[in-house]
Length: 199
Image (cartoon, rainbow, N blue to C red; front, side, top):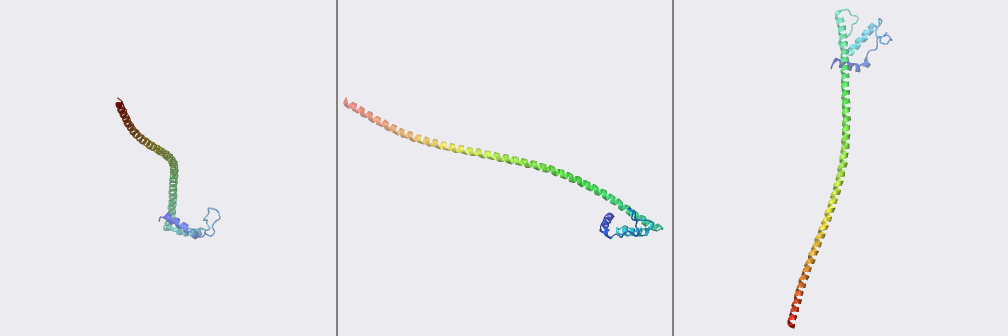
């Protein structure tokens, strides 16, 4: 875990554990230390720095180089933490802007897809109505053809019956004609015989 993450974690978890402000602290806004409360301020700062995990405490009253170097290192760590905070905020803002841009593009894409889907739904509804209309027309045409076929079949059957009747009557007339011819021959023969006998 980075120093920035540790700092933010400890800051969020220890806010209620921060030491109280030093005694004698000025009431002016933005004023923390003055000539009369330096010891309390230094103690408060050291406790706070240790709470937030910085590497060294401040020794503000020291004159030896080691203590001054330790104070400088602590201040440098604070500056580095501040720089990391700034970079983190900038990175977070960039990420937020990119995510917002991605969301905007996705929303626009969703709107386009919704419009396309609505158009396809309308097209499908039109095709469905057209198909239903064509199906009804085809069904009516088939029914009409079936009716015409039935009527034609009735006509064929009727014609066959008429033809059969005509054939039957023709045969009957032929038989009657033959009988008539036979009767004529007999009658003619009788007449001839009678005439012969008279002579």
